[in-house]
Image (cartoon, rainbow, N blue to C red; front, side, top):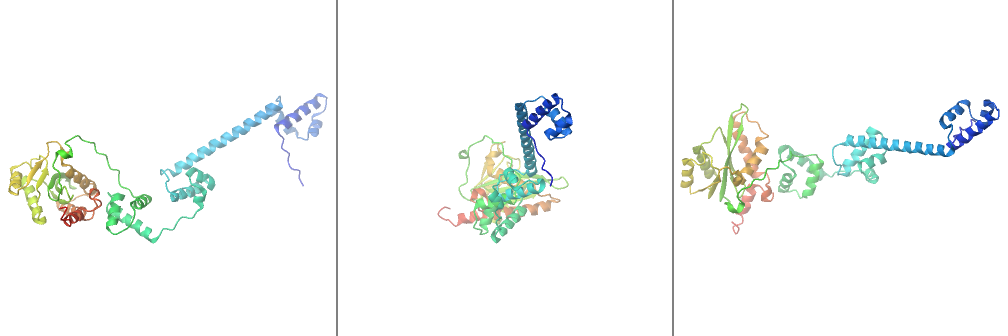
Length: 376
């Protein structure tokens, strides 16, 4: 049976070095001294190079410095490893236990660290990590699949529009749950740009619609077909119900074309506005437009020149029209633009929930208003 190797402390080494130097000073030979000290010649010279001339207190201090240095090196290495692991995750905040659970598994596989270490980096409690994940119910699975369908069908919608649409379909679900599922599935729309606030007339200083068909707003938008030719859209909106009455497309709109479009809307809907809000464009201030308003008993409500914010409802509709339709479609011909614009208008009126209408569509809001004779 081999003898276990003995480890010497710095104090013991220094005491043996002093004993050996004393014996050598008395005339003893080195082999005899080494045999007396029970060490080899290589160990003797190694000890002399490392601890020669040191006192016991110096050796103790040196050993403490070595331990402190090793501890600091370990801390730096662990910190560097933590930074590398956080960079590996990198998706942002891990706000749900399931995402933290998956992150812990990824760190253990890629870095070979313990579960305790990975949980400390991610911020996950070990009992939560070991708890088995909840199996989603059939209702939850169907709801998540429906959210994916909504996101694919309407890529410019957010979770609020999806919530209102689901409520309209008969789902009894909390809005916070829809927001949680929407974020959990990674569904998102491009960030909305914040418009610069303009200073203009206050709402009380302008005409305000208090019932359907009291004020219609009219404005134009421009886009192009694939060959670079211009398309002009004439948008007409009921300011009270937010109903899109027209999104007509043509290469150009003259005053006569605009009056023909308004006559078509009146004939199809059986309604006509009390006031027509519009800007000071040449086709809207022409004699043909003034005559149409006079003959139809419609009061023109022109905004001040260079003040588009006074036609806020039309500008808001134009923003939605641009964001959800014009920015996502490419038109090869004028006919294609006319058909797609009309389809989008019908969808806007009958399917798309409107925030200012309490999640109702413009068509639902108009029907609700018509069914309340006391209010109307």
